[in-house]
Image (cartoon, rainbow, N blue to C red; front, side):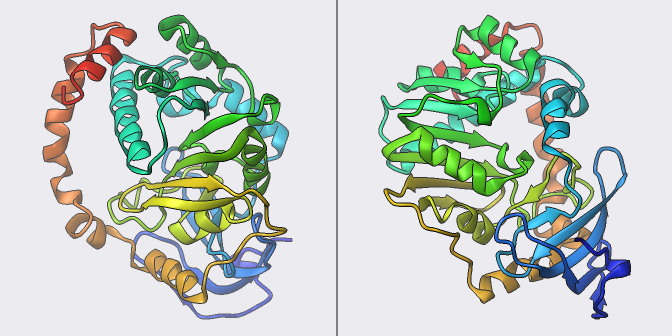
Length: 338
């Protein structure tokens, strides 16, 4: 059972970092990843709706999570019908989103190659959105396909790019044997991280790679008003994401400035349980949560200069307004710096 900060059976001191609600040193809850029952809690505002969200950080694995998670059925309905409309205000990607997704796909493919993942492998992109990464991965030499729960976005991918995108949930995927599984800004939306890891392990062939990118709760370049969302059930850091995957995967490449990007290699023999991060790592994550605020964001995270980077970005995105989606991606593939 979760006890809110106001009703915690313990009476710890609290601290109030800039931009956040009070953090309680000890509360009782049950971590969805490792099962530990102690940690800290605080209240935040959803960046979209301003509704209150109760957060909990596990004191054993450092995973930050919503205290009150939706049911699996509620999540299934939401992601198949409402999520894209809520966050993109459209049932299919606009040209500027296609452009952004195409540039992100090129960047991710560069990182995958830096990690030593061979080209030509079969690749499955889970949560494929409009299909931009699947298309760009195909152009980059991979045998790629994807799955996407949203009906409108998956239809868009098939119609516009001719890629193989199935409209389904991760639990519906049955065909194993992939060389690479990718998941970009998806894991934080899934309510059972351990089950996800086990599923991906089964989907990959021996020696296969799992490529994950998630928002990084310890990063300093995110505005304090743009961190927490009701659709994000979990908030990962380097220690907690490596712990989440540890029973099934070994990290071989990590980037944790900005978003958290990790390439994992499949373990031949899964472990019976996750490997917990060190106490020092857990304390570091807790300290980073206390440090986050407007001062850090503006002066250390580049917040003051973001307006200047947005001007050329808006100019580039304006140039693709009248272009067809496939035309945008083909141009990016030929001229990645466009």
